[in-house]
Image (cartoon, rainbow, N blue to C red):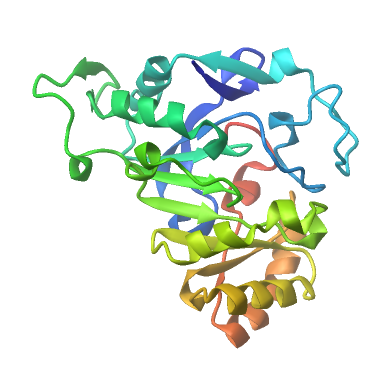
Length: 267
């Protein structure tokens, strides 16, 4: 089966090169792959076009729904791999929606990607005559996830970093769906997983502290990130978060892409 992707414009898959804007890899040049569909529905989601299609009544503060045909496209795994490789980057960020809903097909895509040589000079591709490269010589893979889906081993073994963003109560998701205890334990014990909590008000950090205590998550692996889709809101909430990060030993995550490009697709 093919992968189901989000679109930058009707019919054009959201595969692009830019600077990672959030989390532990912020500021690094990367290739992005944005997939469609999500099993949660955050009321403040800034990529609602990946899941809130016409007929979807899950709440969102904008009230907007999106036409599926214009905002979703399917591509063969090999085609996706070739488009990523042509961007000439050595790090891939897989995001969504919730990308782990398609983890098995992503594993097939990454296996195709490992057989391609990346030419930074002209972006051309050629088959690697020696066969698939060792993982140490391959593109590093970073996954953005809401943390509710357990990846199969065939995909998990290919991932270098997980950016896990558990959704707090202000997201509007029921806790039993958004914060499954078994999955939080799974990520807490995986050293590749960094936790990125979206914060709107200081009170939200109390929920973060409760999750940290219950699942023994090291402070060095926790980021607090301001909720917002404009530079002014993000900057104001970052100023609020500085003292909380200092108090609890957490790390602060900016949203660089919003400052640089605004709330736009393909950035």
